[in-house]
Length: 95
Image (tube, rainbow, N blue to C red; front, side, top):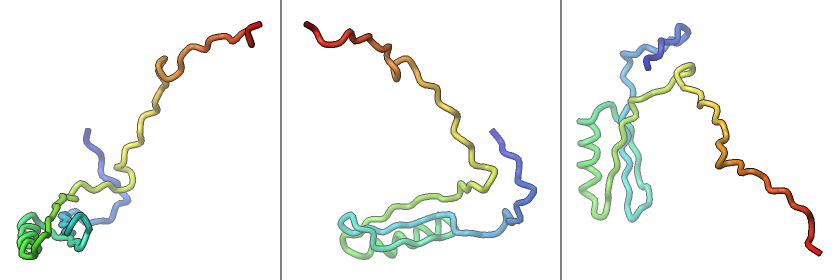
């Protein structure tokens, strides 16, 4: 589903902005984070971090941006019969 551009949005879509995130971890702990503009730059960052022993990297593409008016509201959920089982009448304590 295409979203019409926001006429109040003054951002230039041709402006270069960091769209790839590289995170470096050692023993599960985040030790570095860099934002770059391309996958090629991300590869260079990963190569640099990989020179250190015990370091692993994760790369995420952040190019999917949501601006005001482009974020979809969640649809209202309607409860199903499974969510609300039929009530059973309780006649009180047995005698």
